[in-house]
Length: 390
Image (cartoon, rainbow, N blue to C red; front, side):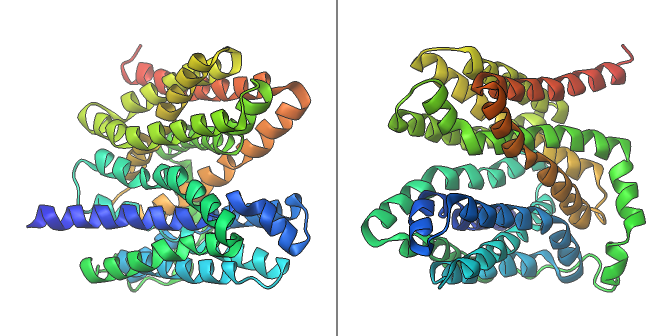
């Protein structure tokens, strides 16, 4: 029966990730309605959303510390419960300042989940690559389904009911997780919280060669993912002249491939090697983004999108590599710390690629993504050559 319970843990953790992602992704399709309702600019709403994603990234490290102190189950339930509450408050926002505060609150609440859930899953599985791949797939699945659902709800009922989708998914997830997942023992229940945030141990962990090396790979992947999620439909529509419908369809295809290949890439990293799987994903990224930047024709763009979707499955092998290199005592806070670092650095992808598109054109900006993937691939190949003494 143990296998049944661990599969239940994995399934519910994945649904919880879907729920926390869904609450955030429900906002983007209704931005024009929000700007009209509050009389603010798109840039004003963009500031609120940037704050939300920054809060999400910054919550990764504290969530790991909290998981070590109070147990993973409590932190995951807190994340899903607060996501439900924040979604309700967001939908009921009486003004733009309140909307901005609730958006940042939602980001912080959702950010408590992923790092803790990943370390929790790693305690139940030996082949953690496949398990992490399944867990990560909850995000792309939300990216595929939620924007479409939010747009449909908003078109019929308005933007406030659309934002309730986050609570609609998160509330039953909270109940199911509370009912089916057993309480977990904290790893460090007695250690003072201030000790976990001391700068010396944090700097020491990040400076370890294996952690620094893996962080470089994760930054390259996160930078590319963030830019792709922000600009792929606009790139296809503005630069290549596709219709909005066709560009949106290709964006959906990207999420389908991205979600479907995460477990497979995780399995490859278990079966063969973390770096080998990461090399495959980033190598395909060089081809995919190069094809999108330089290619022409709908069939060519579809191939580029598929390759980019596979490339963005780097998360399964790279995150598994972090788990491999952290001791059992370090995993909670340590994995949260490295996620905060690489997500904050990776978040610059939207700014850099968007600015480069304005300054030098879309071919150059998406060509940069191919170059970033090439950098990650080169780091991986060089490390393998050094290991082999070549």
